[in-house]
Length: 268
Image (cartoon, rainbow, N blue to C red):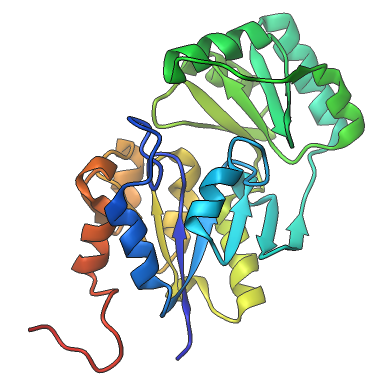
């Protein structure tokens, strides 16, 4: 039987930020889906970073669309990557530094952020602790960057998006930060590339999400499912809105669409 893709955002779709756990019902759903679906994580994170690996180990995805489509891995194989234009990166860092904005990225075990004190403040607000290993963000100019993260409130993101029309600032669901991505990059384009590699199509895919970096992939997938805790803008384009993450939203959507049925099964 040909497999389809089931794509899941991580934060606030699979990973509940109220306790930083993946609900037991979502884990059961993933195991039930494996027979008929490729399990794919599609996230703004780089799942190879120190603070994300633990969740990848739990989910055990067949493939990962990292960093909003700018890096794609199937197992241990890197099948696609794109790096941000260096001149654009330098201009963004200059403007953010002058304006007092916390912007940067985590690479491996190290955090490269301008105004790191603001990142620490946000970490303490969200998690009660900050264990960052900050490095000089100007080193990013020599390393190559796929995407950035902005940590702060929406007014700063809007200001930078106006200053840099080449970029989109995709607000997190809590509106306390944003993924910073070149206009042509998206999870949707990552899905298209992954489908081509796996021999399936986006029209056959199912995508779950909650925030604005999920907007394009929910529209591209044959079935786009927004969590009950999703941003209103995402719910508006979703094909279906399930329950919130803390109310077994993943499991309930899978049951609603009969994803757990094996071939030949019928409803009782």
